[in-house]
Image (tube, rainbow, N blue to C red; front, top):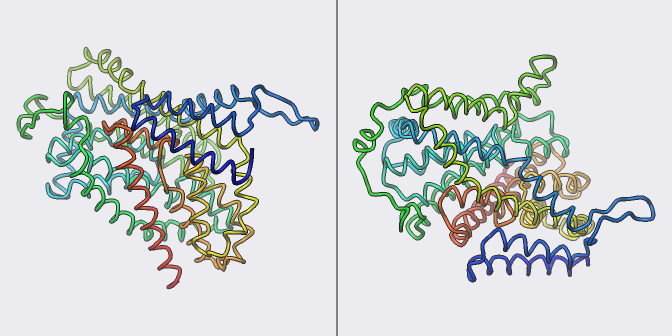
Length: 463
């Protein structure tokens, strides 16, 4: 199957998956895996690995499913585990509460959603949004305790801040790749500058929606058995005894961010030799978070709580297990989609949409993002399609081309749903059900994508 029929089947598959999860309470892992298998068979992926007459190898359904599942584990599995372990230590030692107190002193008690959104926006410039959410989630939870603000509002605000810089601002890989493909790779300062400017509308939209939906949706940590009794800040501090100092509290989070930033800077600046090797090695998320874990262990030892380390690790693994498997299932769905002819079909018929100008890269990236889940894949794929069409679209000047990069980024955040690993990271770490995830994460990314495109269109009329 190919063409329009395949796109229709994909849309129906997504609807079936959402209904199965939200209406019939099928576990997300089973729903996603089941839909992926059925979609693979309908789309015509071979049942077993085959070889075409020209010698080209075609992966069968079992291989595609295995690759999608293992690929997700290899990319963010260890990152999630180490990040969650750091978070558990920060909570156990009271460091998360200390960090929350530091943030509150800067922005005040009345603006915690803005504080966490801006923290996410800054952190995600050098760090993938998945890793950033895991790293900052302990601070989010501590701020919820510190200010008694809605947990859902804080989750959406943090997710929004992380996602916006992830798709707009280098040295995040997506924008860098798009800029290079479209011929403005040597003008990254302009890309970064316009990325900051284009963040304004979605940051405002994300914050407004976070506050709105926080009044409508309650997460598991606010209701039912998981709800915590409200405590004053003084009562919370008393439970921990003496809180860590600012440096010890910040190091497990700040050090990995600095290391990942150095890795990105080294690549962007073209460093060579031992310095580049060291930066690239330490800048890999797995290694950077491993270093952060070491600082967390030091913090645990300083607090005389090393005897709790085994239990903390054990409980952390129990917590992240379901997250890992559901996230991997989302990776399977994305792999199935990329193994069909749907992306090729969209690429071949891109000219039909080219009449819409600056909106064309946005729509194309949004289609690809929704179809296969990865924002980075959507950005890089769309940039490759758009590159030969820049002149026809009237986007050949340097500024217009950079705006095109921004439009691609806006589309690549529209929308985050069940085939996106970030959707499951936000939903699970935010203690929300999948149905609540659609109301929060999916809708907020739609609103932010549209807000971003509105700003980009206005800028295209001015610049």
